Image 1 (cartoon, helix red, strand yellow):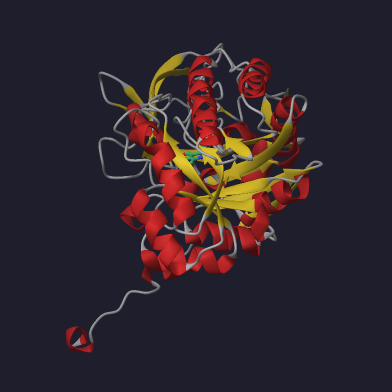
Image 2 (cartoon, helix red, strand yellow):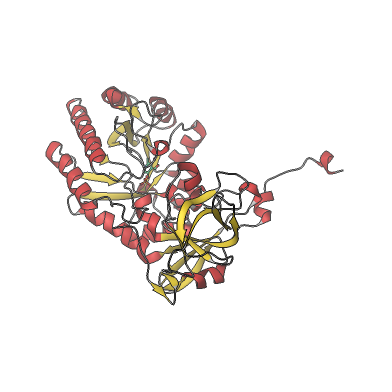
Length: 420
Ligand SMILES: Cc1ncc(COP(=O)(O)O)c(C=O)c1O
């Protein structure tokens, strides 16, 4: 899978069988639009790559995108869920997931949240010794797994590397055997082992290193009398955001990782938690050019989506391909920075992009916006959250209404004495 490209009709980008311009005309901008067929294909591709080799459970990492329509589609595909908060668990239960299909991996979990998670009956993947002890005080007899810090990291930015030595996540690999034995003493049933090395990795090698660590620990645990039933390799499968960027070789990943498990252990089941891989390229963000500015040293395309709508460029310097949806494929004659309506210099969507001569009113498409797009959006600058649409068989439906000023004011209270 290379970076996704699209067909066009009369100079209009086609998305899910519709002209992007028609979708924007129907629902306004900024607008996230998801292609249902692509979402389903992505899930099936990753499930099939691994299940060819061994029993596989895909737990979609819903932090990437928690829209209820998207969750319902993935539930129907047979996906499980990786949830990181009680809020994500509630959302997935609302989308109809069975609690047994949900695994909770929190970090710095409060007792209140832990109790609520236990109440919902989902499997818990413990992140610390303290969390383990506090869980055993709440309830014993539960199947659990542990998040390991494998000492291997991978990711598109330092901020998303999670598996390195000293990371805030998980239990250091040196302490695993004693921790599992302690869990058993406390009346918990440790049956799984988990690690997540980071997000957006493009090469197979770190996953192999991770799996070497996990399988060695499985054998150490076996010798200590603890039988592990599944290995969870976490998420982190990258996608190509740039034209000509190399894609992760999914089949090599699946074959190498499952081979390490099968050669070294008698564990029969692998779990994986892809978020980005499943949703990123299922979705584009449509935003309208509202202002073109010549700032002498550069030209700006001012659009109606900023880092309130898509924070990845501002937060990680992440690259998203950007094109004009209403003059698709036209010769590029200018060089622009694409910036949003937020009053911060860091508010940009792309630097130094070649595009056709951009006019106010043009429709700008931001590619691969389905993962960590809407789910990280905010109401900063008192701008309500944007709308989301789903396209299927040439028809678009709204899956989230545009936010309103009432949403911004809801829950705020002004003491009566200030209302004089
Ligand atoms: C525990 C865990 N699993 C899975 C993921 C999903 O990562 P990605 O979207 O890169 O697949 C994350 C992302 O932060 C995570 O923390």
